Image 1 (cartoon, helix red, strand yellow):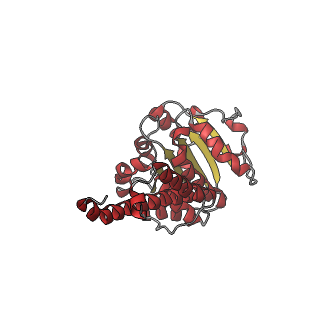
Image 2 (tube, one colour):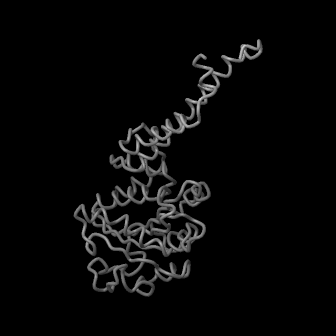
Image 3 (cartoon, helix red, strand yellow):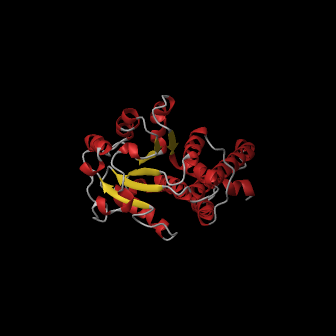
Length: 280
């Protein structure tokens, strides 16, 4: 039995082993495959880069743990940029799982020397959906009286002179879309349209096309879409992380899959004359 005959009858488990190895290697040690940076990602990066050190920015974690594999790398990349620039970061969430996601995303920065209440704060969950967001934009303390840890806002150093949405230089929602209270459309209607303040949508990939009109109409400052945008943002920061690793793993899996498809087709066509003659 020659090589091509063996390829036609290869055990599926062999293919699975190749796939596992191809995916695992980049996750352990990212390859850093070259990647072009989309203009939409670069637009967000350049806007944040131009903000002065000490700017107040807020990020709303409007997704749950189930969407973490796609959206966590994006959250981490944006937070890395915020803290690298020396911003004051205010986390919040319009869905009940969001504050816990925020805690898990912010915790690593405490080990890097960032101080809760001075460099960042988790304001927790705000109820009411669109009505709640509208009220929060006008007066934060009417909607949120204590932070995630239960401390009254007036006792927190970072909350001095922070009363409404226009007190921030930029807002971001990392959003999983339908099913949440603060969907992308809700944020766009209540923040950049009403108050004309800079705002970025960071969404999972499937939602990105439907949100492009907001960017084209210049209603939002920028749009980040999916895992690729997270990897691109890491490249902008020159800090390859989980986004780049996952993109490398995805690319490696595609290479293995395409390789087996090519080998399978070569085997089929090389053995076809033998089939016609009855040799196989």
